[in-house]
Image (cartoon, rainbow, N blue to C red; front, side, top):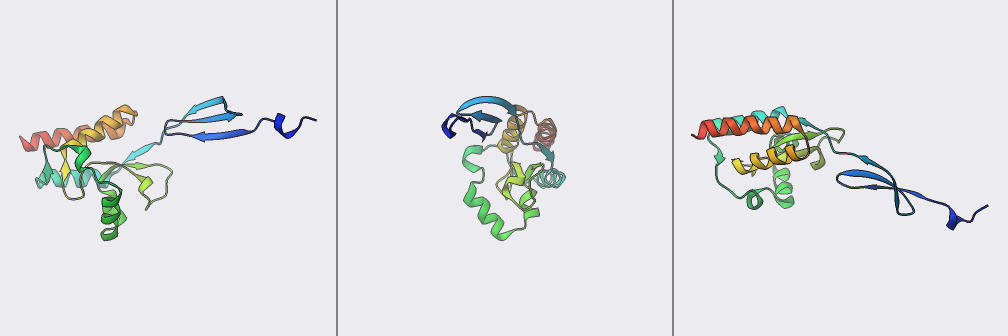
Length: 149
């Protein structure tokens, strides 16, 4: 009977893009796994309301204005999870409600919608093939551009 050192041990390695089963560091199987998202109808309605009320920013650097972890925590300290969700076009399927992991594709700074945020959502959704999120962002961009002239 071979010793414990001769036995192969399987380890699951989870990355953002794929799940790999490894044996002694060598890949055995690669299973592509991506989170799946449902369009958040409350967020679509919130975005439409912000556009109609002209509560938007047409020119901004999304990297500078996108809410960071501290800003998200500060917002959650003063608002409900439903309010937080209304700023995210995607809801991660299979993840518990009332967690940050449940909410994806933020499009504003918790005060105003940012055109650059919608563009970022559209781009990321297209990149990762989340077609329903991509189309929702596209429709909102069209509405924003039509409204803003």
